[in-house]
Each structure stands twice: as C-alpha cells, then as structure tokens.
Length: 224
Image (cartoon, rainbow, N blue to C red; front, side, top):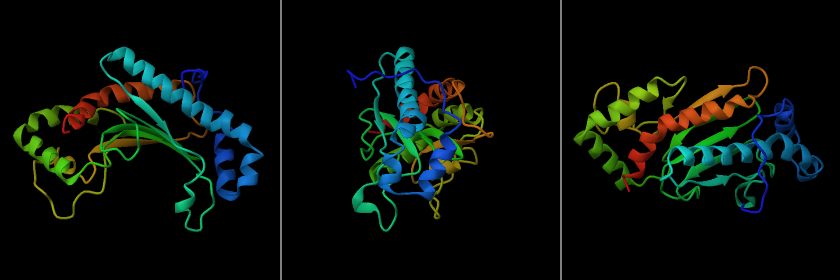
C-alpha cells in the first residue's frame, strides 16, 4: 500500500445500489469484468478510502494503537461456491492488530451492500478458553464492562451480537446478560440507505463510533 495512492473518502455514489443489485442478478465474471471501472469507482475505491482514513484518524487519536487493514474480495473463494455465482454482492473491511480475518483477535469492521451498510466490533474467532476468560473477567469486575456497555447503549442503533448460548453460562443481570452469554463478544449496527448511500459524513460517524468502542476493543484484546 505504500506506493498506492489512496483518494480521500467522499462517500458512496448514488449508483452503488444499482451496481450491487446488478451483481445479484448477473453473477457472472464477464458481466463484472465489463464493469470493473464501475466497481472501482462505486465500491472498492470508496471502501478502501474509508478504511485507510479510519486507520489514520484512529492512529492520530491513539498513537500507541497499531491497526492493520483487510479488505474483502469481490470474487468468492472458488472452493466455497456451492453452486453460487463467483461474485460477492457486498464488500467489507476489518481493522485489527493483524487484520487477518481468521486470526483470534478482536476486529473493527465495516460492510456495505445494496440496501445498507453496517459497522461495529467483533471477536468472531475467540477460542473456548478465551470465552471462559471473558466470563471470568466479568465475574471478577462487572463494573468495567458495565461502564463500557452504558457508553455503547448511548450510541444510536448498536446491539450486542446474537446468538447467545441457549443454556446460559451465567446471569450477571439484564444489562450484561447478552454480553456474558455471547458466542462471539461484540456489537454492531445497521444503517439503511435513505434512499441513497451515505456521503462524506459517514466517515465522521464511523470514526466516532469506533472511538467509543475502543475501550471494548482493548478489553477484548487483553483477554489474550
């Protein structure tokens, strides 16, 4: 990325939903390759610009923080097609210490599809031992997570991840119940287009939300 020019994030063009619906209806390589310039202008370019802007802004706010970027690919893994077309009809990125998707680490994420975008913080590949440490840490100091969750609850639209365990691992009270019993600790929100995709202001909203989620990121990161 050092030699690649990253353009400033200016929002997503109004043509983005039509392009993504086009992928859903014409999921074939020739169709996509004939429109690769549209893909770069409407989808990949803005996603890449937003990801690197957030890395830079979070790094300025927290100089000790070191985040890497992973941006998903438009082509699906050929080994997992299972009769589907070769193209994804969405794109996303993650920010983490390594940003390797399958690494056991918490990651900020942002995704966009034809009708909406979503963002938040998750720990999808946490081990069983990590989940046990998560619950023990809440048992030992529920006040820490309580403070974090109360801040998150002030954000518009954020919810803890589902599903939770059908057989509860414990009951720390209604505020922390879903967090304590989560299979994948974290939270996120969905923002539906109204009707057009968001513009430049989206970067500020995601940055502020990621900043508010930073104490949760540090909590999850410290689980090891």
